[in-house]
Amino acid sequence: MPSTPIALVGAGNMGGAMLAGWLGSDTNAGSLIIVDPSPSPAVQTLIDSHGLRHEKTAPSNVKASIVFLAVKPQMMETVLPTLTGLIGDDTLCISIAAGTTVSTIKAFLGDIAVVRAMPNTPAMVGRGITGAWANPAVSPAQRDAADRMLSVTGPVEWVDEEPLIDAITAVSGSGPAYAFYLVECMAEAGRKAGLDEDIAMRLARATVSGAGELMHRSEDPAAILRKNVTSPGGTTAAALEVLMGDGAMQDLLTRAVAAAKKRAGELTG
View (cartoon, one colour):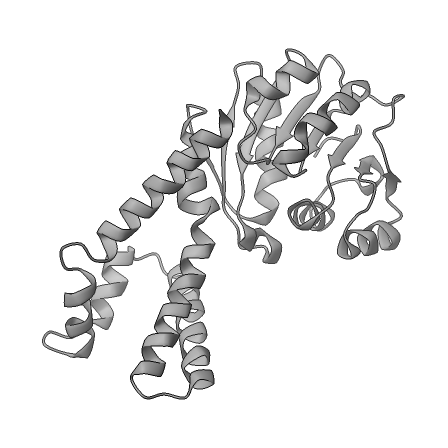
């Protein structure tokens, strides 16, 4: 990781997840500057325990090697003009703000190197995945640095075109909500099948999280793992006949991801 200043702008849940990952890796804590008027309690604990430099607003006497933007998208046009003092000739900007295009960032910070990234909330427990795109100004060394910084919370998948970030947002950025809703639906189905509501929810939560962990540890494709659970003519096969029918789960998820991608494109303008 770079030893020259790294400015984390925005210290909420995702910014905090990244910060915790950096502090657990080879990042020099003395190089970090946390810029946020009101960090989350978890981030404040990290600031205090590691003696990190904290500024309520961006300092004007520091040129950062990396400016990591983790502010809410609706705050970007307010925050970006305050960051110009951090920008030097070789500064890399990494943005995880959904819907904020590279052109928007460059409009405020100039013609700089920008990586646009989309992590997801499992990053908060070190099990996230991030999609990323680098604009042409990003050097190979800067891309490597971005990859190292983003990968502290999980693997990074790079794409060749900025609009594909909208597809990543729709699949993995929003995807945890789909999994959580699956748990809700399974629990409600269990309740309707006669189970106590609390038992049904515990069964659904443990099943989905356990299946995810099994898939995480296995090298087998998801389709093979599914087939391993499915005995011909058995109970799982009966359920899958419903889930895999016309207009069922695949069609619903395809429509859902398309709707999310469309909305991401609308938010980017």
